[in-house]
Every structure is written in structure tokens, then in C-alpha cells.
Image (cartoon, rainbow, N blue to C red; front, side, top):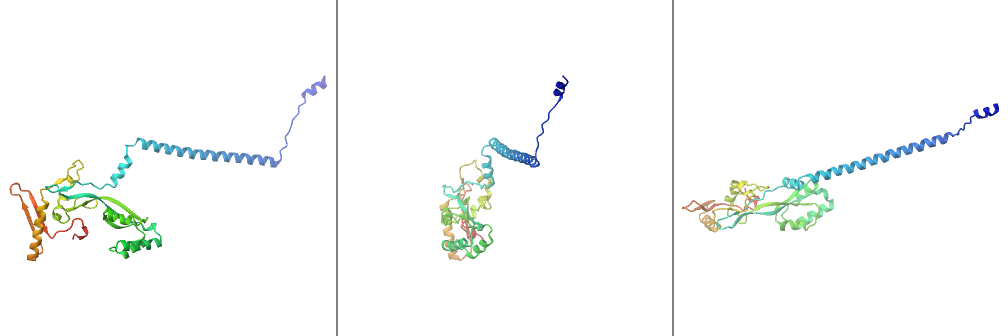
Amino acid sequence: MNNKNKTIKKKSFYFQDYTESEILGNNINFNIQKISLHRVTFLSFIFFSLILIFSIKIIYLSLSPENGFYNNNIKKNFVKQRRDIVDRHGSVLATNVILYDVGVRPKLLKEKEKKNLLIKLGLLFPELDLNEIKRKLNKEDFFSIGKRLTPKEKDQFWLMGNKAFVFDPKPSRIYPQKSLFSHILGQTDDVNEGISGIEKFYDENLNNGEINLPLSLTLDSNLQYLIRKELINAEQDFHNIGSGAILMNVENGEILSLVSLPDYDLNQRVSIS
């Protein structure tokens, strides 16, 4: 009986013997798994953050006023579109067309391309100062090579196929009668605001977008032409340096013609002094 009780009270223990290398190996594997988990967590955070940012941006744009971005850009580059000016018979004295400013970005050109550009410009536009253009090309800053060019003149640059050209279309004011009404009509600046003559006096009226009709004057182009011609003939006879004439309707005070010599072509601003 006693032997049986002794047998029951005995307990056995099992010890697993780990070598040092096995212990170190387990620790390394655990650290690698831990680092990998951190990397996955970090990349997941970046990925979902980007999704959240783009989602917020899309929601913001969808809730913004319609064409808001487009309208902001129009206001930034806005050039006024003025009403036409006509005489008493409806002949156009001033109107709007699209003219072009052409610029050059020298940084886009290599030395060989700059030389080729100068050769082509000299052949197509002999009136240009090639030495001045060469100097500006070497400075590598953006510069203007032509302003208020007609579509035909702009196409001459465009057909050269040079990547450095920049074309900037602008609504501009032109005067079909050239010098016939130069002292009366006046002119506009680069943003189509009146700076002299009728263009300045009626600037607000001419820029009124709610009025679709042209501004009609009491002047008569035919009478203006005839009186100007007679004044030129008189200058040749009497060798005077200037002259003027006015024709008025005495019944209602309307000005039918107003001529002053010498005059100038309103479309050729460089000739105005």
C-alpha cells in the first residue's frame, strides 16, 4: 500500500533543450515580421490618405459654382470687347478684330536652333533688327518679337514651326478709314480702354456689354473725304504746314465733318508722335 502511494506522488518534468543559435534565430524572425508589419501599416496609411485627399478635392470641385475655375481664368486674362463706331450712314469707323502678340522663349532653343531661327527671320522679315534679336536670344529671357500682328502675319511665324514661339491672341481695335477720322476717334490702349478722342469720351458707353448696337456718330464719311482732299490741295498751293475745317448743320447743330491736318493712320501707332 505504501509503495502504491509513493508511486502516485511522483511527478515527472520534461525540459526542452534550446541551443543559443535557435533562440537567436527565433528572435530575428520575430523582428523581421514586426518590421514587415510596420511597413505594411505605413504604406496602407499613405495609400488611404491619398485616396481621402483626392476624394475631398473631387467633392469640393463638384460643390463649387459651375465653371468657377473657367470664369476665374477669363477674368484674369480679360480684354474688353468694345462696341463698333459708325458714321451716320452706318459705315464702320472703328471695330474689333483678333490680333496677335508673338513672343520668344530662348531657353527652349539650343545654340544651333538659335542660329537657324535668326536665318529664317532674316529671310522672312528683313525689317527686323537681327542683331537685337540675337542679343535677346543670348540673354535667354522671354521677349516680344511682334505686336498687333494680323492673322496672316502671325501665320508666317507659325509656319516656321519653331517651338520657342508663343502666340497671344487679343481683341484689338482697328480703324478701317485709317487717317480720315484720326483726330476725332482717338485710340485705345493694349487692354482696349479709350485713351483719347471719342474712344476715351464714350469709353464707358462703348464698353457696355448690354448694348449690342454700334455707337452712331453724326459724321459723314463721304463729306469728310471730300473736305480733307480739298484741304490737302490747298496746302500744296499755299505751302502751309497745317489746316482744318468743320462742317455743321445749322438747323440742329450736328457735326457732319471735322478735319484737321496733318493727320495720322490710327492703325500705325509707331508713326504717331
